[in-house]
Image (cartoon, rainbow, N blue to C red; front, side, top):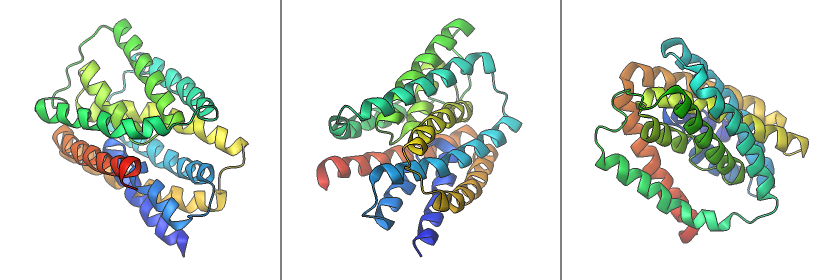
Length: 252
């Protein structure tokens, strides 16, 4: 009955991920709990193969209500794919344990900054010219894409925070642009995992369906309640990520 447990977790992950990212906080631990003896790469590959569908669905839903400025985000999308491939390659050569211990402190800095800047992400006020925005989105895509391929937890939340902080986006506009880049990093990782045989396709299908259903509900709530609601969920998700990554690094 493991597939029922992980499918429910996938639905909840899709709901959270559609609003502000961080769905892996839910689904990945559920996969490890349900299949403790499976190869980690197989669980990561199966998780990605499900999550990409929910992310793609929420991106489509957002795009029907929020205008996407494609010239600004395309460099970020391309760079995110390159970064994810590079990160996945790097993790085959370098042990990421040092990042496991550093991550909770990085997330804590993100949380404290967001709490201190109470107006951060409430208004959509792009700060830069087209050319500067393209360079910044490319930099964000490359760095966070590499991180996603190399390690991964909180990728969507990092995308959202940097788009809000560096570009002046509100949380709602940041979310759709973050998802476009996150779809790319997921696809890059899926290709790598699939080529190495690390995807359970018989689990990927029900997980994908559940993830899409959760994503539809999460996107509907985000669009209905606006940037303020997304900000609150962002703070909650980052707080949970701090607890989870802190426990993984120091408590286990």
